[in-house]
Image 1 (cartoon, rainbow, N blue to C red):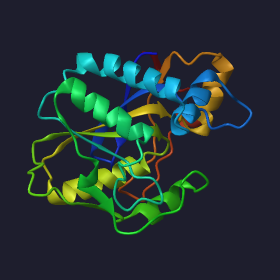
Image 2 (tube, one colour):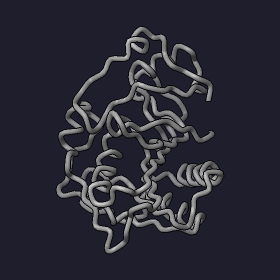
Image 3 (cartoon, helix red, strand yellow):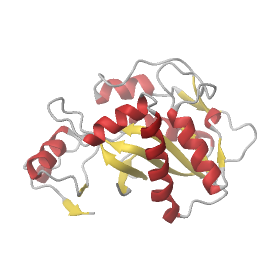
Image 4 (cartoon, rainbow, N blue to C red):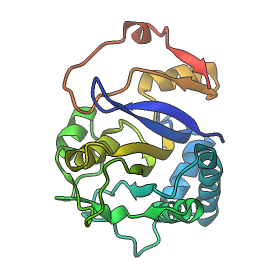
Length: 233
């Protein structure tokens, strides 16, 4: 399991780096070990949590994470502020990364103005509407401008949650340097079909991706015709 890197579009001019360890195929007819492991992580299975934490540390070490790094996480649908009292798997990952890199894990810097619905069954448009202006930042006097920030999550699907957090940060700190790290990334339905056809997930799939900050829709003709922009990672 090696780290993969792709562009997470924020709008048509701006994108952020998304690092992930594996793919999460949402297609119900396709079940593989990656998906099983991610679900076990979500369900706090001890051996799986330790495996993902170890792999995350090994994979991120070459990225030279500095002591200036600040790590936060996405909030679950029923959280207004990060509840770190229950040893959530994501909190264990954040604390482990911070301890390894000698930096800070401060998930309570971001909060939500209201609880939200689980995004799993929502369309891209519905996710964008629901999460628009929901996240806020309370940095407690910490200047995040030019500070390296790593947003961690278990799965990134459309990227709307990550971009909602990024939007809240940039409103107050427009010069913050933000990256996203997830255990898994979910390809689009067409991309999943392509990967299943090739029977290989050793590919890095490029554009297109959803755009968070712009309603405009662009159609990638080559992609729709399955002339996919694919390169070996």
